[in-house]
Length: 176
Image 1 (cartoon, rainbow, N blue to C red):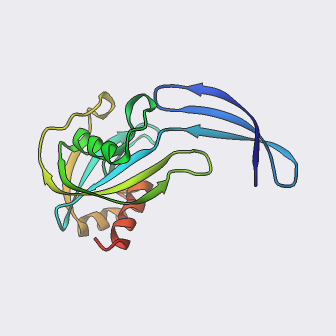
Image 2 (cartoon, one colour):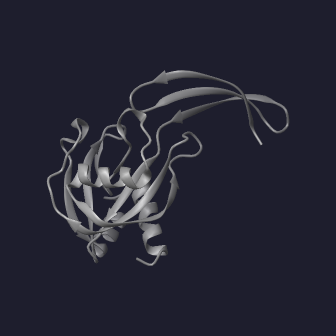
């Protein structure tokens, strides 16, 4: 097992920190590891039976717009209770409120570089309302898609968000 011997923060903002750890490998050799620390996220699959509610937004790091399930973290690196965060993200990005929220599982975002994990929720018994989007989400769009349309979008490359794909797998494997 790799052991951390020392750590230093190299960057910090309101959403993440980046640290560099001095490590010792199992064979005793030294090394370094760069880690992005971000708070855990919630991803919500809003469903009304055969339809799924997605959001589309410009993803700055990859420079393109992408369809995905509503997801995110709390402001200022806060870590609220996962169900509370899921309800907040759903309301913020779509305006929807769920009468039922079921946890489907946990995802590790990028375990080779980040400590961030996420919880996936299925939201049903939905009530419509107005979104409460953050400034970075001002260009966000939302729409309903059938499961067949969602799967076609995955195969055509219109949905490439790894968390959304993994969450859909959890949905199917849990029998929903």
